[in-house]
Image 1 (spheres, rainbow, N blue to C red):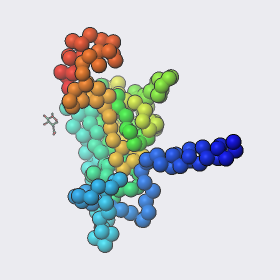
Image 2 (cartoon, rainbow, N blue to C red; image 1 turned 120 degrees about the vertical axis):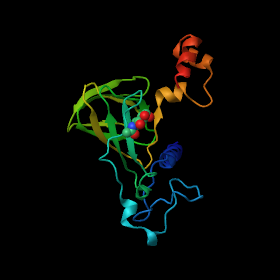
Image 3 (cartoon, helix red, strand yellow; image 1 turned 90 degrees about the horizontal axis):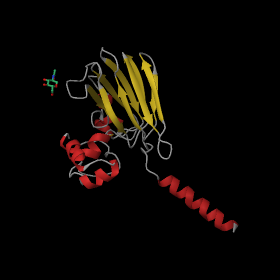
Image 4 (tube, rainbow, N blue to C red; image 1 turned 30 degrees about the vertical axis):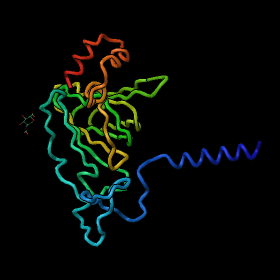
Length: 215
Ligand SMILES: *[C@@H]1O[C@H](CO)[C@@H](O)[C@H](O)[C@H]1NC(C)=O
């Protein structure tokens, strides 16, 4: 009996260690070689002998993103794809711009917690916890305030004011990923069958077809 408990404990520990996350670096840095044809978890390292300070330097976050789109928002990422020096380090950054009443639609990051600070204007933000509670946590955050969106939680950021807003987010992955809920559900490629979505949302198929036509 005791040995069985021990075995189960060991198995549980083994599985908990097999859960994927951003890897801990095994060297000072591993600047991404974004052009390599070798597929690893992350990107292969550029030869350290030819790495320069530029590999750790990004530019352009002083520039507002283009918010002339239906949602009135823009995200300027500084992920590993933009800044190769982030490879294996488990962090990244983004600039968020909002036109008046601009929205970053409900979405989640499969690989990262997000910590955001408002540097201009004010935002109404929130996230929803997982089943069975689906609890909504919301807040109004103003210039200088900080809000954290836990990893994997569906969240949104809305500029409820009539002036532009700007925020900066740090993310706990070199490549956080993003799943935009409306696009993923109604704009998948190929589309999810309208009868499946009609049943899921308890709506008429015509309404589903209309929603799918929007994406
Ligand atoms: C912003 O995006 C809109 C829509 O795509 C485009 O028409 C416009 O030229 C862009 N503005 C700038 C400054 O790039």
